[in-house]
Length: 275
Image (cartoon, rainbow, N blue to C red; front, side):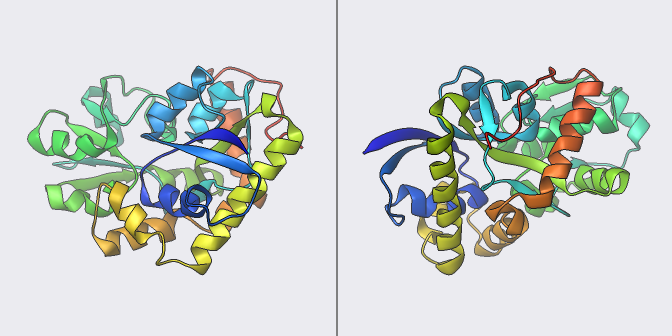
């Protein structure tokens, strides 16, 4: 059996999606070696082509298109699921120019949205996403750009929401917010890529059909162990567009085109899919 490296984050939506694939619940002649890392770490691993298949932010995909294609299954996009800017005290958009903002990585879609929303914001500090709320709470940063489970728990740190960048994107474009997708190395070849895509879809379908089975695996890797938070997280980020991106592709194309026009990502002639 041929084995491929498969990178995804320890967040509940990803461990829910890939549980069946990495726990022998799906029959096939392809094996997978899981690499559990934060999405920004995965973005940078993919820059060096160190992963065969990987979760990546759609911002990161903008730098990876020559070597990786997008799969139809596994994407995280929707409505009401975007990154938030939070702080201890209220502030306006113009205030962000003079604030020290903690971000979860320069290749995250969250940071791209921040650059689109507040291009004058320049005082940026990178840190792991799970440290941002504490940094803002302790005053190490004036504001934080938060993702993943953090959107459900920031109030526990005494923080308030300044702006929901997903909501802003939806109002500006009328489109869903495209956060991240599953990429495959183009040099794997179209037949293998199609087979992997189908296996990922089967893995998602298995998780929907047996929602309680992946729970132990999810909690083993999650930053937030509260069952309600885990359920909210999965419900928000795993949906019909995760099974098949479908017309959600319009949002991905809009994000990439906008970033290209502003010279925030390199231009690429490569098609998004291999087929």
